[in-house]
Length: 148
Image 1 (cartoon, rainbow, N blue to C red):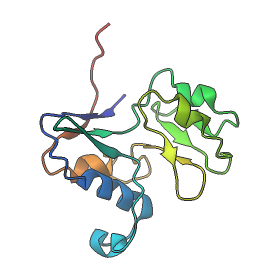
Image 2: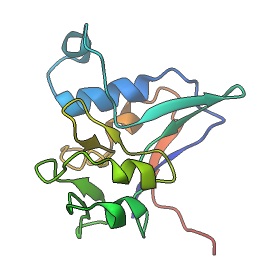
Image 3: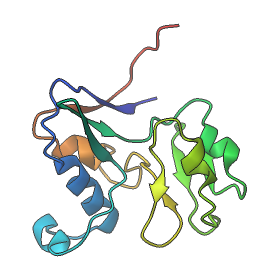
Image 4: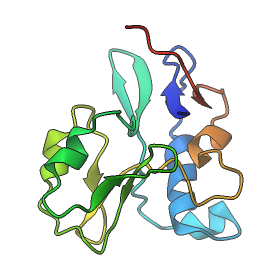
């Protein structure tokens, strides 16, 4: 399955991925006009530590602890590709999934439930907005072999 990966050596810490993510979540014709004066709440987050910048987003784990911990079944693994998706109508905002995610990739949304990266599965291009918007190609969307 394709996933979002970040090459920390190339990340500039510009946070454009956050803006592209937020814009993809809101929609609209023009990012600057849509996000002007809006406090964004992206599903990807740039962290900085000891001069190294890197983006944190859902890794769509093969055995996701967030899905296992969800008491209402609001988090599920999409059978069409393994993407972990949120059914906001079922989420009660207990935040157990936030506590159980070892990567810090699940966060509260503005409406009291949770949000996380869903790889922009609803977009026409099939490529996450953060990947398309990264000016340095530090964020990629690809399939990688996992060494055992």
